[in-house]
Image (cartoon, rainbow, N blue to C red; front, top):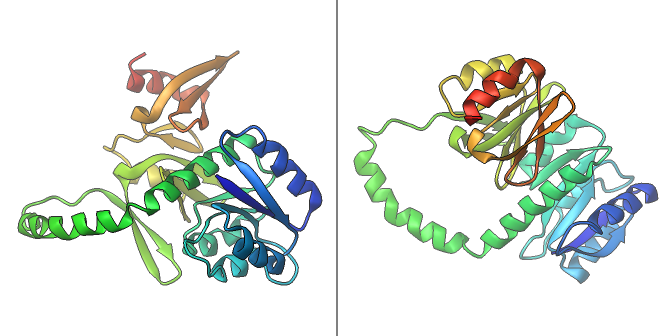
Length: 254
């Protein structure tokens, strides 16, 4: 995967380049310090992924992303120190949104999510045809079928339906929560208590005061002293709160 780094701070660019040196099958093809340069490099280099800082002088990251005109569009992962930009970022179909300081594990997960989205891009037309073929069957079943549990996430021009069955894990992000699916994350202004009530009876379980996890996505349990962490299929590490350990072990059958 060919990656373009965009940030007005050289230290941030250096940190990203070092991190990408430890992520397999990734090549950093260029760097930009502002939005205008980023647009030119995107047109010249045609990267697969753009790591894009939001706060930059002149054309900021959000405007830069909206002005990308090349096809196919590169995937975009936004990085910023401020979570209040997130709703606008997700309106632009960002693959992910990472709060600074960027952690290696979050960057790697975001990169893998962008890689999967890129790979699936070529299958979109086939999926659309299949959707049309299945629509008749769904229409016939609509009267008796029970709708899937879902969470509606506000977006700039309306709301997006996020099936609960598509959510791998959820984390608190200050005044928001991030709903992480295989291909993207969604941001919702909600409390964990509200989500706990909404998710009652679903496979997602609370593992920490700031996290829910789908047990089927857990591939490893790690113990470091008295701390337990769950490793998910995409490599994400989620810490288990002390008061949740017993319930987590029971849910995982260990």
